[in-house]
Each structure stands twice: as C-alpha cells, then as structure tokens.
Image (cartoon, rainbow, N blue to C red; front, side, top):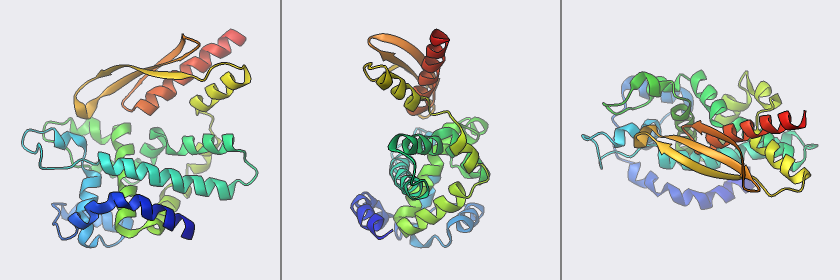
Length: 262
C-alpha cells in the first residue's frame, strides 16, 4: 500500500479542487449527509466533494444552473483510474497463477458499467443522485450509466478526501466482499478481450472501434459503435457509454465468428 500511496500522490495533483472545496458549504440534504456518513464516515470540510460526486450532468445543462454547478464527470474520470489501479492490485495479489490476459479480463468484468451499476444499486445510490429539474428522474436514477458514473465518482471523492487507504477499504467492502463478486469474476462477458485473442491467434490486424453516431442531449447521449477487422465490419453496439457500446459490438462480432466457424 505504501508504493500505491506514493504513486497516487502524483495523481492527487488533480485534487487541487479539494482545497477549493474545503470550507465551501454543500447543499446536501440531511438524509444524503447521513447516507454518506454511513458509507465513508465524517465528511469534514470536504462535503462539497461528495455533493459533486452525486451531481448528474443533467444539472449542469439546466438553464437555471448553467455555469454554477460542476457535474461528477471529472470525479468519475479520477475514480475510474483509482478503481482500476486498486482492482488491478487486488487481482495481482489474489490470483498469482493468472496470466496478464486473464487478469485484464477479470478486471474488465469488475469495472464495466453493468457491474458497477449493480454495486451502486446495492447501496441505493440512485436515490441520492442530484438531478436537473428537466431530467427524467425515474429513468436516470435507474440508469446503468448514471449509476456507474456516480459509483466511480464516489470513489474519486473518497480518495481525494481521505486517501488511497480509505478508497481501498471502500472497494474491498462494497465490491470485493459483495455477494455477487465471485459470480462476476467467473462470468465470461469480456467480449473485447475475446475478440483480441481471436484476431491474435489468427494473425489478423487488431479490432478497430469507430463511433458511428452520437444521439441525444448532452446528459443523455447514446453512442453507436462499430468494430471492424481488415476493413470488414464485424458488429455494432449501442449504449450510453462508449466502452459499453464497444463491448456490445465485440459481442456481436464474436457471435458472428462462432456462427461462421460452426
């Protein structure tokens, strides 16, 4: 953990907003504060960080709050990196016999939006999202993309507020000790890795993913992505996250490949 702490101190340069947040009052409800304290302990002067972690991008695009509120997208970026590193460390130590490809595959199963949304639902995180007045509340609170983003953002906030050890403890408790963790690791749904393995074993160029369309408002976009190899489109997929659309495209590609080989 000491090596991790030193490594993440460099990334913590992104946490300059922590100083700005300290001393800045949040507008979190008492119910939300109690929920967060149950998860992470006392919020201290960084309550604004957690407010940002729960703020869906629909708030930013509301006419009444444009330019006044920050969404959780930057924290999601940080949390994604922190989570990826912590899960990588856990898998590296827990599966000493696993090769790099298997470790990568297992990590992808854990940190994809479907799994993260499942962890978020276990916490009822959707109930505490801060949404714009014009947003579809029911749709967003149950949205896989919104829940996954908020979960990663929360990890980013914990890291900035309390450090890598607290973030690791949160990941252990709410991901690795989750009742579905072993099932997720055992599942075989990392289609991108399987497609790469197929192209490598058959001496083909690596898969190329291309965004075909982006549809919808900024806070409710839908991406359609194609995957091709040797200039031949093998599959397409549509999702609210590019990475998930890529997985769906790879899934369709693998299904077509299996049909061809069978």
